[in-house]
Image (spheres, rainbow, N blue to C red):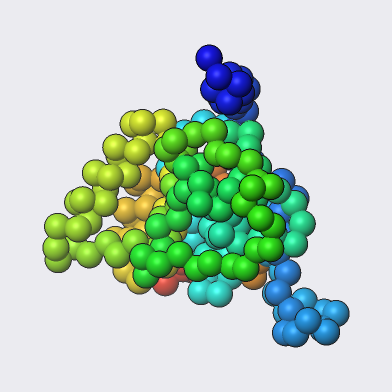
Length: 221
């Protein structure tokens, strides 16, 4: 056994005892200019997922959902904090191998790239060949074609293979809320950069901001 293979097996055994995903003290600041001292937008998150699941992600447009996904998959660099997938810090992994840990399915099917100055040779190799975490950013679920069935089967296949899925929707119709409520095992709500976890949909809609966001779709008073 080569030294690299021995290290990979050791890392995999260690990761088997880790959370699938841990987002720790994560912070991303955007400023109007490099000279501005006051951030124009701040995203903060602390999340931990020990087991495979389908997680519903909701929040108003511009609240930071896509930024959160980019940070988790390593295409965007945090201002502070870390993202660990099965124990490996994704921002310290070679950029062309980060998709072997977490994969972002963007609505436009394009991944935004952010400048990074650290040479690839100074970054770690991914110790996995296939992503554990899959993030779906507003997939086009249309009842008028067969695509919705394809996506639901894809979600189910990934879940059966012990993957962690995040499904982000910006619902326009009540049936979309019901669909996410049916498939999701827990929820995340993102509001003006503030990220909260909720064990159920009923718990989610107890949050005033979430109830205001979804009220017209769920008949909330």
